Length: 229
Image (cartoon, rainbow, N blue to C red):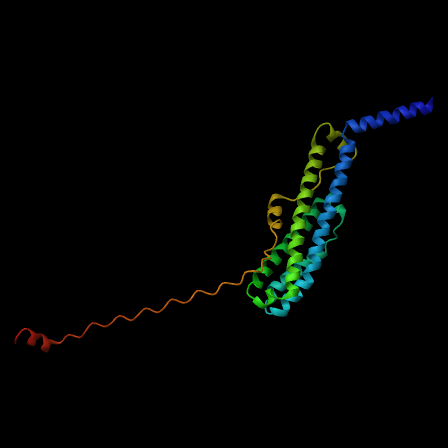
């Protein structure tokens, strides 16, 4: 009798949890973890490319020390943040991580602008291979980030909706941090990595204007002769 009653309670509890959205919350939470892991994976791929990229550029443009230092420091800032799945449960740490990634994106963009001034560097085989890898990584990062955004939006909506909000409160499930509109706009634009174009030649300087001829000096004697004097 006791066993039957316990089984009945188990079935009732299962139906209750299913009806109140518990299973949906668990499924969506696992989806967030998977999506965030892919974002971290692509960010790590980009960070791994930076040292070789900097060293290659340095071989042709060592005098561009300022922008090379910016990229190196930005990469160090990213590496200094422990990127784990738990970041999605800490809004402060999450925003710090996203800010560091945005700074690295900006530094890489400035580096690519500098590269335009060095045709020999753009034709280097190693550099072109790094260019291809960076471009592919940026594209995959955008896809992974968009997947994470949509997954978090779905989870956060479920957490706030009635009656699943009661279940979320009971099991201490809170909304997850997401990419802000301004940060997403900044980091979703990958660095410019099209090195097929050569820098345009500077416009020729305008030709100097011809000097105006001076007016002839007055000749009083000639004027008198013309008048018949």
